[in-house]
Image (cartoon, rainbow, N blue to C red; front, side):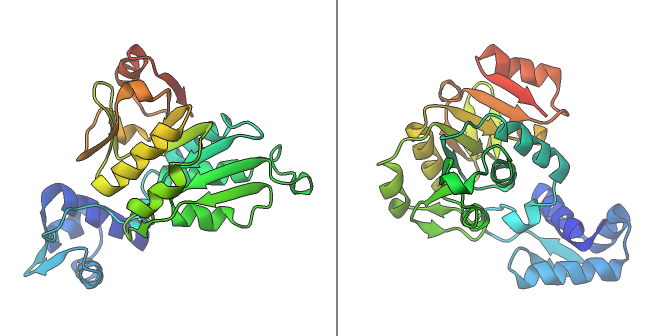
Length: 261
């Protein structure tokens, strides 16, 4: 386990438990107590936790892993989801991408599709996104016309949110939106942890003719704080091969097309 993966694991365990102990973490992660102390001190400096004698506790703010620590979690699965989702894109499409590690993989897969990369003919695809990291990766792709919403950047996710983001979105139409979520439930819909992100994502859903949720299996059958949209507004789900047949049957029963990597 490298340091990036270890820091991500520490934050995930802290989020689940609310409080962690240095010695217990050292045993679970098979590293020295000194290493755990250094890691906790590093995360405390970034105000991601509060150090205590012998461990750490969550800060008194709503807990949400920053994107830079989420990127190492289930990375192979997300890469495959990105490839599967990218295959659903056609030349000339206008696609939307909200923020997140899985939608970032979709963006990378779309950008590197050889049949779309014909810069001499001008842009073959239009991408609309409110995610700064996705915009940064796509800006150099000559075959992609890139549209970035306005808004205020959230450090946790690199997403632009707030009233300024709605100005662009209210005047455009998307052929397909690839929607990254924090949770999706077959009965009640798609969710985000942060209400500001949920609001902008909901507007993107309204502007899309087709909505495809991209989510790894750990997010299926779950709910989070703020709902993005109800199930009838979603057309398809792209997930990984670890998703159980029973969970996928629930999504199929409410009319979603399910694609697995």
